[in-house]
Image (cartoon, rainbow, N blue to C red; front, side):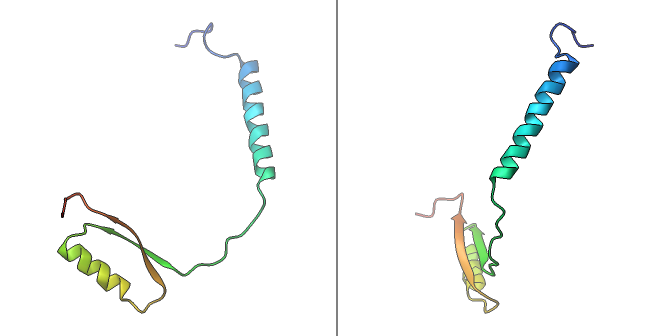
Length: 80
């Protein structure tokens, strides 16, 4: 059971809720409505840069399905 001395009153709860609602409404009004242009770029991320991972990345980048770009690479092993 909650302690009435430490829990907020209904009045405080409604005041806080109203402030949050007003702030949300104003933040939405300040953001302009824009639509991003369509992009057909395929973005590839390679996890595991060893022999088979590098081969799979090369296969993916050789596709003729559309524009493709390698955007990230990660490996847990030190290959140096």
